Amino acid sequence: MSSIDTSMKYLIALAIWFTATMSFGDGPKIRVLALKHSKEQMAQGDEDLAFRSIQDAKSKGLDIEPIGGHWVDKDGVMRVKITNFNNDIPKFRDFVSKQMKVDAETDDTIVVFTIGHGSRSGYLDNLGQRSEVLKAIAEAADENDQKTLWWQLSCHATAGLPGLETLPQAQQELLTISASSSAERESPAGVEGKIMGSVFTAMAEKSSSIDPNKDDEITAEELKNFLATKGRGSLYFAISPKMVVFGGTDLANQIPIVDRNNPQGTYPKDYIPKPRKRGR
Image (cartoon, rainbow, N blue to C red; front, side):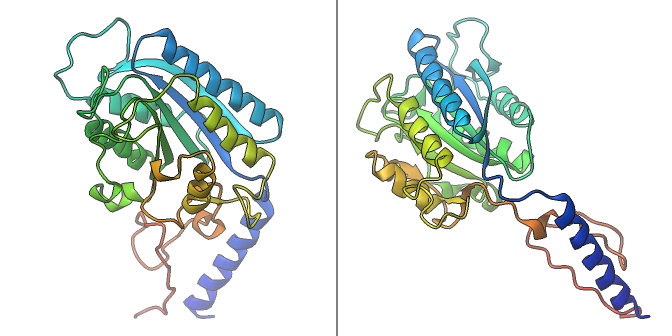
């Protein structure tokens, strides 16, 4: 028997085993992390509103969990009110990356919900420039290979916000952004959690308003169209309309690659193994 026949039989057996052990049709899996960077009751109120919406969607069958609400600054968890705004945010990035690991599951999505003041200059209270916060969250997503939606609640929420095309390609493919206002406008309190809740409720109810083709995958285009009904379509950003934001277990990418001809390596998601005969 040739090595190519043996390799193909191995792959077929492995595929059968995965089909038998994987569960399908469970729909999207979502975790929500709230990060309040303005130490005010307003921020806590918006977090509470969002978490109530999450629990409501969960009660309707959506696989969604809040994994924490934290007061944060550029250094990570906020202990006291910070007055020095001049440093970068490596500890914030590390904190976000650590939180992304909490209860993580394959192909789930984490919503990073930041709440706090923002300015026309692109500055976020206690964090620094939006461009740096974007970079920190994108790097954390890349480090964890984690599908991430940065849901940003701040005034002038797109001011100083770089385009996703400025990120490395791997980060572009993991991160999308929903902003609460344009660069010229302020963002009111007590609204964002309701809009977020409407997204999750529509998913829980398997509404055609957010999933027209009923495939349990929400693409960037589908989410943008849904947010447009809330007046937010122009404030949602993704590198491609076809990228999957919620859901989408890819069985082929779940099968581990075992290299029987070369030293075992780490392979990208789009890697296609090609068995070959010995000596070639």
